[in-house]
Image (cartoon, rainbow, N blue to C red; front, side, top):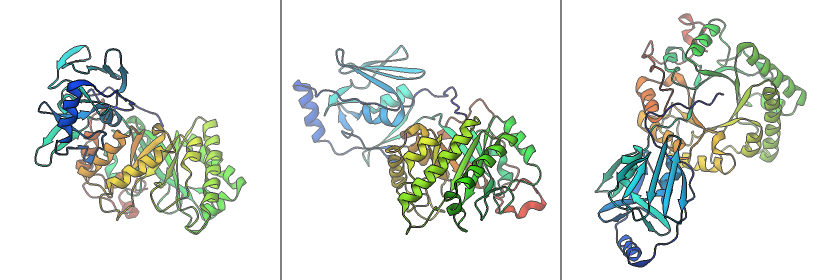
Length: 446
């Protein structure tokens, strides 16, 4: 999985910051404290979901002031506090911002800007005018007076993007070029726990696969091979309990990838065990399997992404920390909290991300988004959460259900290979449902 970052079309977005500033003293500080406690509450919404801040926004000298820390954590600068001069130095690749408490003049990439109000210290935090976020770093800022709400839309961010191809995705292959990675759903486990490429809908195309892969290569998209299985016939149980079978599985997978030019494997093994099982044992056995597979792949210059259920979901069979110690990335399926045809609840996805980050570094986490569930509006919100926590990337299940409006919503939220021309309209607006179209496209529907 090659990590791609490209020149920003817009400057500005912000990550980790630990900014604890001393309490202000004197008459000005007291005035700020008194003014703030009498203010009606102001809330902040970032990319369609509330952003909790400490302290909350306040009005000062007629301007809405927001705590810089909260936005730095959610949007992307490395920030340094210089106590001797009471200055803030914020850097993010091609952008440098200099602020000083009590000074209305800021410097952005060497150019001076005048703020609506000077930065002040309140409750131990530096507060800046909300409008500065728009003027300096391009964040869209809207003040909704009736609701006393600051509505922010973050800039595009260069996260890694992946999408699953297969299960009738042929008609939508024109949407592939902007993505960094396409995961092909062309393999699974059989009932005995062996890796196979010719069973069920998760199968390697009998013809045309090479042409499609060459098409993807020509677009500069990395390709990965997904192995899918549930424990419907006890296949996962057999694999987990048989070390020689695991060794054979890892060797067969790596060999297939080498033969067909895949750099990354995506391991999607779900529902290991049952709710009545000893999950501690299941987690340990699965982590051992992943390590064995990862060791083989890494020895051959290949990578491994492991698909996992969210920690706040019903299934408890994954040890995130142990898996991440072996795998290169974890793809968190943060969905199926409610019916899959409905947009998934943001608060549950937010919780899933925070739980994941308590176990795994953000640069190993891919947020899985179910395209069946989301609308163009709600997919922007989910991507916004991935940006807020500075995750490695986002992934989408599955290309088959994409349409132009959905793709444009993704593209408007992320910097998706901007040097490339946007994909043309798909060949057809019909969404293939199954492999029953084989008479038209015998090889492409897998």
